[in-house]
Length: 567
Ligand code: ARG
Image (cartoon, rainbow, N blue to C red):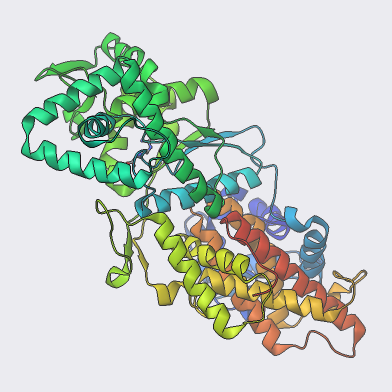
């Protein structure tokens, strides 16, 4: 935790406890209920050095604490030292900032001059965009925005799966059954059907397997025909991916698939050899990792064909040279944990002291309740089918509840897709996500539509107010009732929530934050009339409502979710 009040508390406490602000920051808590104070410091840790019971320490620290117009009270409650912040001061401080900064509220320069590479989304070419790439896309996209907001130079890389033996199979399939030349008017679905069929053929017929290997050799050695067909397959896929990224609001700084690294693989493997790290095992070039309880890292197959791991090795070395990153994040499903442990170990063994800057940002599986989506063609649930379904369902709800709404299509698109993004991001990423349509689209649950709806509701309060928003010269000293102060505290916690989300690589902190903010806002709203005869109270409360809409919108934007003004 960090803000000016905490800084002030720490400035006094470091002197008496002998602990640094960093250590204290790790101890600071929020009391379970606001009547107990705004911040709480458990005093157990000091028992050893101060040789006293925690209760006594809390009392002693409380009586020695010098209050002022910002920290108005320090009170011992059992072993806790609780602090009360001035509500006036907090209201002025937070609301002033929001009114001044608006869409920049939450932004900082904390990460200036620091570079973070984020490898995310990375679907596989020649297959349609499957739903199993949703989580990486959405989590990685959010992390990229979060880091950028904090002033980091975030380099979002799409490491497309655009190389490997699957292309050789595809080429072979086209050669066997395709009509005419492979051109760009062929759809990715046709490619997938072909891919499924050739795999069946290879299963039954070892000769076909040998033919496919031969095509892969041609591809890797730069054979013109093979390369041309590969390129067409890439172009066909990219067209489809771009459409999906557009709908999801996802952008990349660099699109550099596995194929971009093939010219670098030999050098990387050569470095492995020079370091004496490789062994030949059954003809394959490997790095033995038995000492670390891992299967060997496969650098080249026995036929010298490269592998996924080879390309990742070359990519990592290249990215270091290119970006000298402070961190490199691989946002990839938990199923690839071993692969990344192997890769990072190999980088370490090679003497790359930056290997410990690499992190596998794992996430759990995505499932559909009761098979809510059919798997089509080659066992893939298509991303676009899922998006379309969500949008359609929202559209039905709008038709039923608010048939006169303007721009129904845009709102349905924003809310349907928002529901999917939010459902993917609202619990810790390591947890599996279960999609249940009723649940994720529920306007009253802890969902994207709920947050969007809350935003729209307060936006409409502002519209109905009919005067200038935010009002000038509002007296924030009037915003001190407990429910009101709670909202202000939440609003004030936004910048720090972004910092925590970045540190933990957890966009879910933002999602939970938004739900808490909605809850606090709704409590305030049901306890107090915003617009009344008292003009100064009205102006202050309108400012608060305005601040709520600003922060909800900024928070949703970090997750890639739009905030319609009406819905
Ligand atoms: N395309 C891969 C897959 O679908 C994921 C790539 C992850 N990134 C990486 N650098 N290995 O499984």
